Amino acid sequence: MRDSLGRTIDYMRISVTDRCNLRCAYCMPPEGIASVPHNEILRYEEILRVVQAGVQLGIVNYRITGGEPLIRKGITDFVRMLRETKGVQSVALTTNGVLFAGMGEALHAAGLDAVNFSLDCLDAGSFHRLTGANVWDRVMLGIDTALGLGIRTKVNCVPMEDYNAAHWTGIAALARDNPLDVRFIEMMPIGLGKGFAPVSSEAVKARLRAEYGEPVPSLRKHGNGPAEYYDYPGFTGSVGFISALSHAFCGGCNRMRLTADGLLKACLSCGDGLDIKGLLRSGASGEALAA
Figure (cartoon, rainbow, N blue to C red):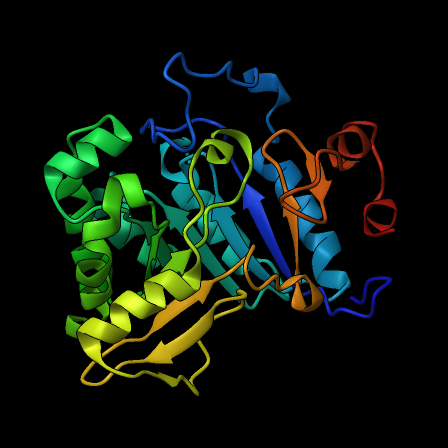
């Protein structure tokens, strides 16, 4: 599918829940947020109807997100149904990793192609301070589980001077020691993220260059996202940078987003979107959904 700017749109991120089992400082206010009522969340069957319409248009790669997607009941069966949908080429998952160790084998059997773990800290104390939960060891076990199963694995880190500046080189070293990719993602000025001083990808690159030497651009394909990947001397995996602010990648964007409550968005920064849920629950045909 091509949009009005000539970009090929072949990738959709699907949020299956707004709920999460962590309280990260840049995402969740201390008082929490009001959850969307259960009946306002898209049912799996409704999401699959959207996917079937999307596949007709050439949207063939899908990523399941949240909130934290692994807390939604039936998520493994949904991965299987999504992967078995005719025309779907890949199904990936983004998770905080807390529950992955206990679910990884079933997700792998269901056809999960790839998993991204959010990991901003490399010790239990810092992790607890940032996320409000003492579960760092469970996240690390989740990453080990994914690697052991042979699932394509990435680790996402949001660099923040006040929380994890001392951890950047250590997190990057996960790609030195394991067959995975580490990505550093610039903080988006959305929600509580507006209150954090931005750290540019160039600042992180400078720190890694001083520690690990001069990298070279990676020539391997690393997935469907916008990261710019580099290979560092002696590294097994690669290190990527998603520079939404300092090097905007909008010109090459290839994705749409479906929110848990049924809005189809062209951009994470969009406040509005198309009311897909209204179409679905009014009995719209597959052709109407595709249109």
